[in-house]
Length: 552
Image (cartoon, rainbow, N blue to C red; front, side, top):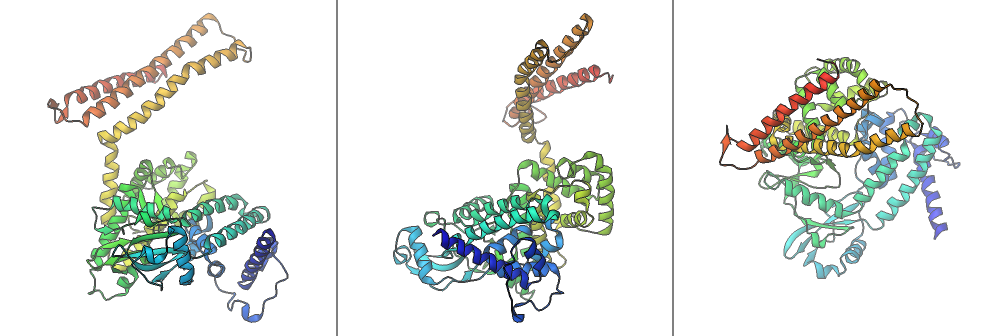
């Protein structure tokens, strides 16, 4: 068995080397130690070696099949690593549409569900209606309802796992032998890709994504197919069959056949809502994954790739949108620093000037065109120059947002996404000042201060032990010592006062969200008094701190 696996891996390595040589990457084959004296016939060599390198890289991945296609699609979400031109090219990779014979599909279903196919379904179509890299889709009748049955290709998991082992080996060789790529930690990137692939090979993750997004969008004009959870396993996913057409066909159809402007408006509105309101979004919204139903509603399909944004990141993205709309380079650069994208605040002024140049270059760019800013940052080499790091979540967001914007333009050339994004962004920024949000922020601050205060005695005791053990020699006269004791005492008092203020703010914020018969300007009187008292104490604390720091 081990020898058989080794033979397969060697054969696969040879195949990879052969494909790389075919498309003109002989030097890379040599650097990776993959040269196995492979001889190719002239007809096996790619016709046009003068073709763009990015195009030939896409062709290599396409020809190597499922795992490498998926790797290319994943890399397309890292334009900060591979560059926007290559990312754009890799986003064109097409799923491997190989079809598995019905008998093998039947075997998979029966192994997963534990019953013969004809006992599970009243009727099952042997011919698939769609096929992709990981699986294919058949129609069937389950409990007298038409359903779509998504089944993994037989043996695909073993093939992917084998390719992942080879990718890890190649990544290690690249890390050691290609010094220009060492800083990018290619082995770490393959680790992330492996985790993504394990999720794609488990349909229960996709089912959970569908259920979650379906619950979030239940009151919207878009639709998520119903999932039959009792019949869904790692390799089989059964969902409601949708009567509709792919958005690709709608885009190509005559303008009078569909209300394309409405479709674009509903689709973009839903996507922006997923980002800024729910923080959970479909991360691969290309036209093939969007359907138009008979009642002109939109439906999302294929939830293998989703993005997550926490509340802080949603707020940060909303602010960035607002500052972009105002073309305020200073606030944009500051926001990039607060988000951790720009690491060194001493570079903010230089980054601001660079962003001004980028915005001038893209004069008239749309409100949501984060891609233009990111592309400019990439093309000007600012990543290394200013230690700029773009998190993957944000790059996935930018990529998906760019897709949605392109789809909107394809449906309606005059479509303006600005009108949809601005209200959501402004509303999101405004929510930071609502009592509920303030209460959450205050609670978090209170917890941090409380933990710090709890640790303070231990920390002070450790400091005094250092002095007692003679590890630090410090000469103090009586007056200096008294001054040190007084300083520590004032600091502790100010921390205690800060805890009291935080507790008052938390309690007052909670009261503000309750109904009360006694109110003042529409707010519960106790909450109003609590806020007022905490404000007075806060002013006193600020004055004490300023006086201690000799600012007054």
